[in-house]
Amino acid sequence: MGEDHPDTVQIPPAETTMLTMQLENIPTASGVYLFKDRQGKILYVGKARQLKKRVRSYFQAGRPHDPKTRVLLSKVVALETIITHTEQEALILESNLIKRHRPRYNVVLKDDKRYPSLRLDLSQSFPNLNIVRKIKNDGALYFGPYASSAAVRQTLKFIFKTFKLRKCRNQTFNHRTRPCLNYQMGLCLGPCSMDVDPKVYEAVVDEVVDFLRGRTPSLISKIKAQMTAAADNQDYERAVMLRDKMFALKKTVEKQVSVISDFKDRDVVAMVIDEDVTAAVLLRVRGGFLLGSRQFDFESAIGSMDQQMSVFLRQLYWVHRDIPPQILVNCLPDDLHIIEASLSEQRGSKVSIAMPQRGEKFSLLQMAVQNARKALDEQAVRQSANLELLTRLQKRLGMKNLPHRIECFDNSNLSGTHPVAAMVVFEQGLPCPNGYRHYKLGFNTKPDDYAYMGEVLHRRLAKGEGSGPLPDLLLVDGGKGQLNVALGVLEALGFKDQLAVAGIAKKNETLGETSDKIYLPRRVNPVQFGKDSDLLLFLQRVRDEAHRTAIGYQRSRREKRSLRSSLDSIDGVGPKRKTSLLKHFGGVDKIRAATLEELRLVPGISDAVAQSIHAALFNKK
Image (tube, rainbow, N blue to C red; front, side, top):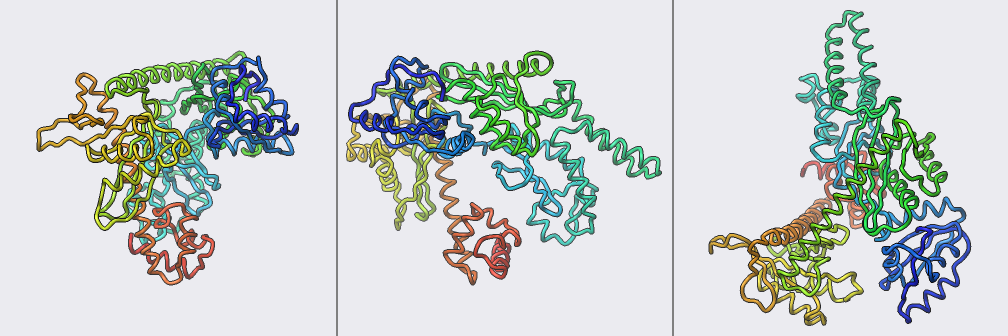
């Protein structure tokens, strides 16, 4: 939290007494504080060397602050403090709590599952590269994240073509009896069934790691030396192979941009803040070459730039394990020395954070700042466009309030089995995955979409504001029937005329309809959008996201049930071991893909049971 503070904050009288008592009993020790709203939801997490001084200063009259902080404190009705032995412990605890609770007014990195990375597990005898969307602290090497699936697959394609790394998955590798076509084409050493020297394969892995870490120039020099030695020994076939590898690597270097002449590794982080949004840009420089960039934006984040930079750096390198020896920033974070010590310990060697004032490093930093400002401008344009769209949607649907928050519901079942529902959330015109919800619905002998819709809406709204923020627009997938069900639930729960509601029905091509239809209460015919057809496309996008989420959840439940049925037929596997397997692997697909060795590592799974599970599931793949 910043050192600047808000003007006098108006707190409801009924809640002032409790907050005042909490403020009077704050300890003076170092630790972490949490601001909470009426529902007990954590709005902000901060740390302090002296809790009492820091927290009480927020509520002192006459202390000016930016509008975002005033909005935050107007919602605070309770606080919690956690004492730590040292300020460094408070720093770590603050990072953990932000990651766990993702408070709205903190700098919170979005989930990186949409960005693919490459994973290399060096603990394996003959490791290979896998594309993953979640980085874990499992001892493996991770490279990326990459900007898109196309980018990571292009990189992987080049590696497979240039280096003789095995391409097969672990499951195939463990059961293959003869080499695949890649071995015949000279693209793989064939460790799956050939007698390959581990040191030879390790050399291939080292080259791949050097390439992915941006050490391409030094790798080219090493390969050139090997090529010359092979030619001197009259091993011309090997020399030609090394020459081709060297030329391929040189082509990749030609496509890279050299940004600094000292050829060292560093990250460049620039942050820019305006009243509403914080934008940050990360440039990854390896060996003097710019390998890639990432943009981040944070709405509602409060605090001065040095404090936001501190939280951002800690979260960034909590997720991304590729920490360079130097990080250039346009604003030094508070707790600089603590962050440097933490990153140095994580990397295993010294990490320094600096803010250059001149020279090549300063020019590199200015390039990052320009990109951050560009990201901020683009975010402002998107916000303006979304606001304009929502304003037109409000007018077209005759709503009292602007639809800042839209919730859409859809059901899914397979012939009446495994019925589920999904709720997706769009805020400010954009999907908000953190707000998505899945619902298991009651089992009926026959499918009943109306009953399913009534059940899920009742469960969502039964607690009123206690179940979270209410939508400005409630959208149900279906025609007038589902809309009437929604209206009945709203009236039964006391929300009649309080929430805007609409139904979206697919077009009936047999009747000559050319577009989907939007139905409103007390209106016979669907809404005519005319020139505002983009509004209909937007609502279709919301509906399609709800449909995708519901189908995915229904399929997941069905697969889990199928897996449990498969496990039930295995001797020695009961409810506890099934639970242990799901908890250990985290998903059905991972259990099916697990090797025998991985199954043996599950708590409570003996060697004999692991063999039975592996044999049963492998035969059903």
